[in-house]
Length: 149
Image 1 (cartoon, helix red, strand yellow):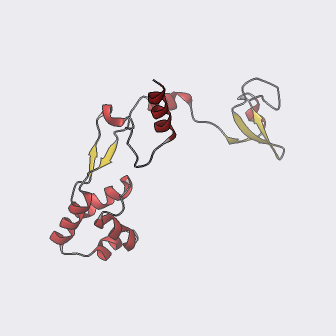
Image 2 (cartoon, one colour; image 1 turned 120 degrees about the vertical axis):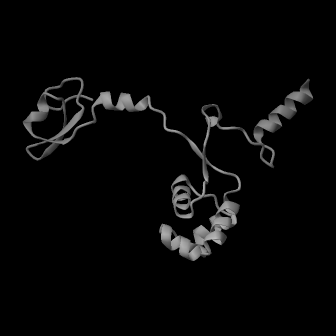
Image 3 (cartoon, helix red, strand yellow; image 1 turned 45 degrees about the vertical axis):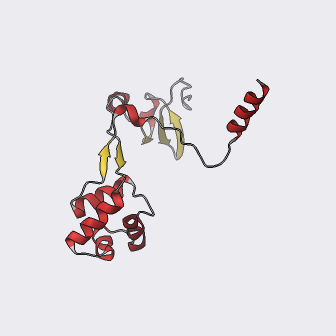
């Protein structure tokens, strides 16, 4: 982006100069009040190399939740109130009709004292192809290729 004051090539800041918001370079930013300044690149590059661990919901999460509720002798309504979530959604999660996201799973783990998240290994982060029940266009093309041979 080009500086709207001096014409320099790299205008990475937005500054309020005499009532106008202008894209300006570092040198011209002092002419007014800096409204937007991007984060330093060193911080961004440093944090990009740190990989966050990936978590996955365990298969039998509904059974674990139901067992914990039975052991604690509380209902779904009480649990929903404690973790500040809608009772209907917590009920669907506890019955296995809905899968909790990572945030909700962490809340449930903390409140019920159970483990619902497991760390995935680095090699399994790639998405896996699943076969759908219906025929896709790719399937039709493969069938046509086989017939032509």
